[in-house]
Image (cartoon, rainbow, N blue to C red):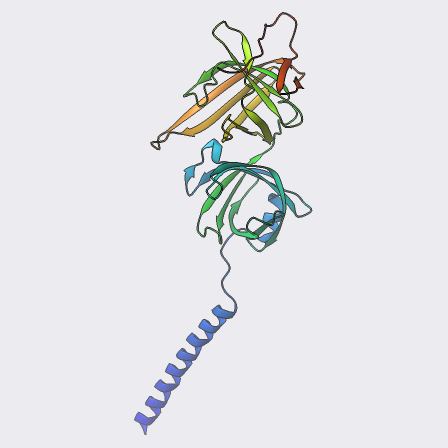
Length: 300
């Protein structure tokens, strides 16, 4: 009789344990555990504003690979980014592309208005504060981690005008150590260099020159005479008075990295005037009287 009672109790315990295990499994399937992260209220309180990508998977992003995200209180967002499109084999510059976003728990879902791109990208917000945000991509490229810093400055208006290069450190990328550059308010820019006689000239073989400033990130793109798209991005460290300072992290073909800085002096607040007659373009740059003489011609 005692053995029967013992075996009955043992069987009951085993059944109870098995039932508990089955219940736990079923419960997890029906209600999957959400990733850990800040509360939804904390995320919604801190995410509003502009953020610039700093690292990806623990490695610092080069300046050309940065992304700038802006989250608005009404649920809309914008994305600025430059990247190489493997399908079209060309560089793409996205200028404050619009979209929307939602937050549920610690999960961020972002949508873009352009139909030919991915419909939705989902992230888990791992941490967020007043100036830093970390998140992990859950679809598209699962597991990829990103760190962002908040951007509180916007140099879009201050950059308009004519600037002259003063000092450059680090490797040159497009032979731009000695240059003058003109930024127009319409998103176009013009680049001038010196010829052998010390005169400034504009290259009209290059076309479709455009730029964006999103916060403190500057991205430029242009097409060469063969129709190939080039691009170059910079971090604007500051604009104070007539002085503008840039910096950039670059990567060589062998994978080594280097830092470049550039200091500019503003010589006019007025943009360039480009006159086109037939197939001939003439560039005029407004500067202070007596600053310099300029010859308008094409590169040889």
